[in-house]
Image (cartoon, rainbow, N blue to C red):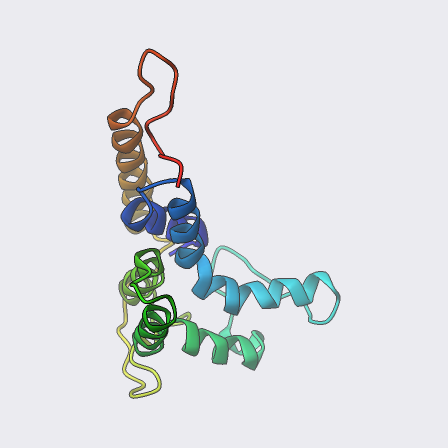
Length: 174
């Protein structure tokens, strides 16, 4: 799934309490791709890496640096996510519910990535088992994803519209 959708899913699923919660849930929703592919894009901007040639078809995974594949394994593992979730719980002495955006990201990717391009290593490092899902760029996946996100956000903002006094109910300060 695309990184913007991951952030929006994280936000609507785990960040509806206030703007801070929404921002944190969005961050956790994009974190797996940000820490794997984001570093590649940053390296390209600094001329430290060659820009992969992208087209409508997924690029050959062998053209993407090995460190991206390794970071992808780490950031797209439910095992690693659960360990980090538990660590955050211990450190903050309460569950950080917004971090579930990371887990949701991995769950969505399991079924929206095929063997052809970055299948999701959700059991890494315990197992290399992966599922051959449907590519998220397929119209049958991408269009319903966008429509469902749009409907959920319209529902959320209509449910929390501004009252006549002009104060916002969509996000409480906190």
